[in-house]
Length: 256
Ligand SMILES: C[S@@+](CC[C@H](N)C(=O)[O-])C[C@H]1O[C@@H](n2cnc3c(N)ncnc32)[C@H](O)[C@@H]1O
Image (cartoon, rainbow, N blue to C red; front, side):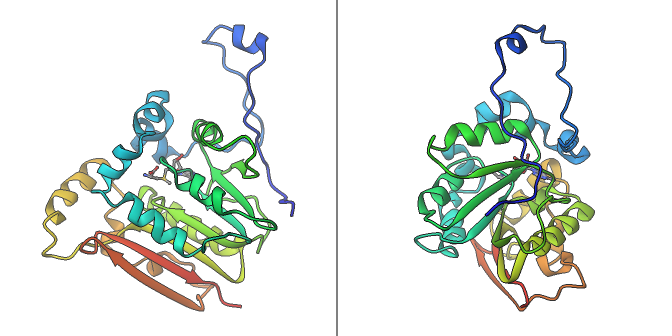
């Protein structure tokens, strides 16, 4: 299957490019999406700075940030896809750790895997993690304005992306995920959720998220369905919560 998209390949610099002074910027390809304002302002330290990738690309650290729930949440998302993946799957946004590797391991013909991220550094990091023989196609695109045709995928994955986006961007990301999913296909979301009042981490997480992740508590205030496009009522929406409701998995089936 081919996707009518702007696939910006991850290029190795030529010798002359390597020899250019570091102050000289290479011109950006016309189709390269701009890094969103919120990503530069709020999350530069986590995703855009070269040291960010060096620091955070450690599974134990990602697991610590998720209070030991990384593998549980990763496996909850993977369980929706089954032991073998033979569908056209899109993962929207790269993820630290082995999430994409686990998906790639399950991929079997005629299944395909596309991964979108707006940051070239994240796509390069993912390419380096994937085995050379991996057939995954990496696309430098903005989740809120995907370049794929309608109904290109059987399923779309959003793993801890929505809480990082301002509401308007989050709404567009969900609308785009719905648009590129085929009728009857699924959107699988794993993200934060409003923890139970008796969850002992509730007040600590409130402080942490307020300080570091200014849009995250939108997902405490509203269900994911609140951000879905009004024009596209899902056929089904199933929510499962984890760890005293601090996390949620939402599986949306697009109406046929
Ligand atoms: C999936 S989220 C968070 C994942 C999780 N915290 C982890 O373990 O990595 C982080 C990724 O989302 C990407 N991202 C953020 N906004 C985006 C957008 N509008 N379009 C595409 N990718 C985006 C960032 O570049 C980053 O690679």
